[in-house]
Length: 316
Image 1 (tube, rainbow, N blue to C red):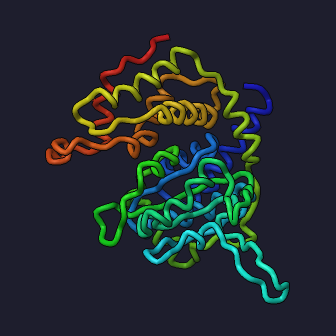
Image 2 (cartoon, rainbow, N blue to C red; image 1 turned 30 degrees about the vertical axis):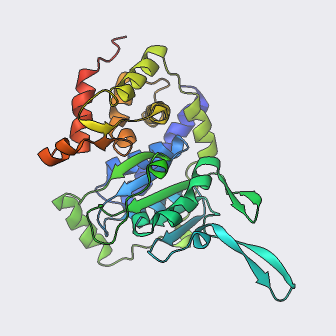
Image 3 (cartoon, rainbow, N blue to C red; image 1 turned 90 degrees about the horizontal axis):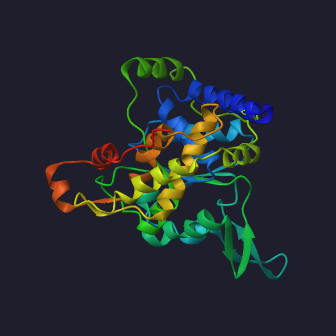
């Protein structure tokens, strides 16, 4: 790697250390969120409340010197509460555009599956095109821009399944679970005396995100590795274990995330192992299990692992 790429890798490690110092026991979650950011994508985080999802996004925003906003999704939330709306300004005697919380760098869409599909769909345009259309006018959001949406497990009361078109907009789906016992003791000990909140004076730009994304896009991918990624995605379409396989967008996401993983590891090229490591987070939300598989109690991750073993990786 050249000097600038080495500098980016060093900055990434500093940011990882900073976030892991606050979000204890969730290093894999932190890495997958950073990978999504480097790949220029959005993240869906699934887990029960109280596992530090908000703290993760706040700390990440502080670490990149970005603006952070949070929307609590509820059944009565309207699309205009997300994107903004046109209102009449009495002082100016005219209609003005009021921008919604979506105009930020990092947007935390908290408990996104507690709002109906119409409100969830308010995110579709901005997630794809990084712009919002209000009153016929297109307005760009900040750079960098990233949506980190959290959802409770779908079997919980009062939740709505996310539409497939929206799920496909998330480059990865990250599962966050309870920390190990030792980590939970450390969390309890530390935060019994402190606040979870990230204070304004905690903000320190450790990473230039746009520069890091450019370095990520420059990571080399051999044709054989690209073919391997596509074979992995296509294998989800020819199995009776899945009712719905992953589309071409999954192949793109898999290679983008593999590039980001290589950058985090300080390597200038993508290996088959990088691709393999990203299969679950990239594809677990893009496939649908066959009904008989669900009845047998098999999970999406288990099915994807089985498919992974059947696809030969390039040897050189």
